[in-house]
Image (cartoon, rainbow, N blue to C red):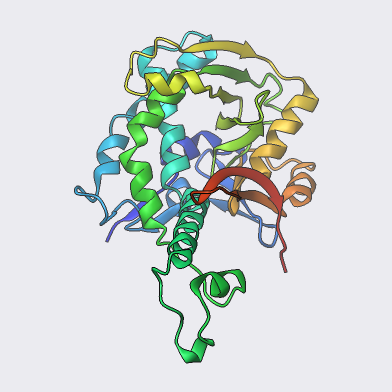
Length: 319
């Protein structure tokens, strides 16, 4: 069984440190604040992680990555000019779609809407007499009572939302490639470089409360902010990206700190960085007790329930 990387090695190698002979980068473990040197091949990997038995072709995502990863480095070069080609847009949108669909963080986040959907469907069936009461060992309670009391829970196989992500990955590439992007060039990368993580798809609030921007670090001096919009959904199959637009953004020091804060807080468990400056560990430790959390609001209607799912940065409880 292969060890599959859920964050592309071609991406992680951008963060190799000159202080480590350009052959390693620094890793930071959010759980305990431990810092360690590592190579791209040693991290962000899961045994048989790209294999998904819910799919007709269980290694389909590997074929997709062959169209993305070989063009990653050249795409960064083009982004720095502010004039990315269609191939560059595809490569970066594809990278972002991959890490936000197939990584362990993505599987965790996308399990929550499915869990809530199963629970809501169960409650509707329960109210219609479609689910028998529990056995005496569980007090003869209804499904609804057991769920609401926390005596049972719905378990979602993380591979199922991953399969949904793989099945819809080309649609996501089409949507994100037809959005407006901020190409963020960090002119202070020597002193305050961008970090990356095991979930390099941080979220930011947008001007529209229904939409979250995606903040994707690409290299210590480069990131993109993808600004989704509802109109892009109509272009999900158009990979000529007719609605793509971009602007160059050169952030001020406070903006760089805010971007790095979002990147670190949205990491699942690991943060990676190039330069081990004095300010780095205090900054990472200050922001390590956060990660992206799912949120689902259940609105009852005459016919059943309406579920509204979103994501937000939440504080975590760590020992």
